Length: 211
Image (cartoon, rainbow, N blue to C red; front, top):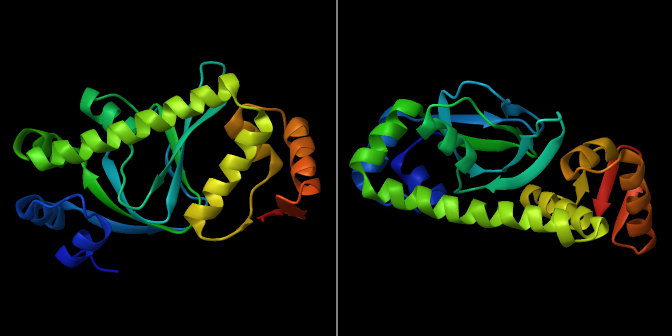
């Protein structure tokens, strides 16, 4: 695909300012990433802000005791608010971002993001909307940790990946699920077995099918 005004209108419809679109066309980079590629590491310096146009990205926070905490997924038309926050504060990244399916994104140099916040009200509306969405997602993640049964959280997590990928067959390990949801691999394996018994998914070697 080529980065054009039509492309931006189609895949980033919330960006409606023609002058802003023109600047994104002049400075943005359209890139494709395979499934499973790490886009951003914890404590990495941030050079670009991604605007996801297709596919999906998993965003995970690393805790002080070197564990992982799943925060939210990025889908088409969205950007990473944790990365935006670190960019505005001129901090290194506090999250890890990894594609869960083949993904396209427009990469904006951070200096343009600073420029947009000062000159384009429509950009600020776009980012405020993104912050509201992802703040709700983070709240939901923490409420899930506190109140939701792990079995329910596992199923919600798998269903979200299947929906974003548009594919019920997930190539994901029990250990990866355990790391993202703050559980033990043994505990996740037991839950997956129960979900299979309840005919909510099917387990095969190296693959989970969401039914």
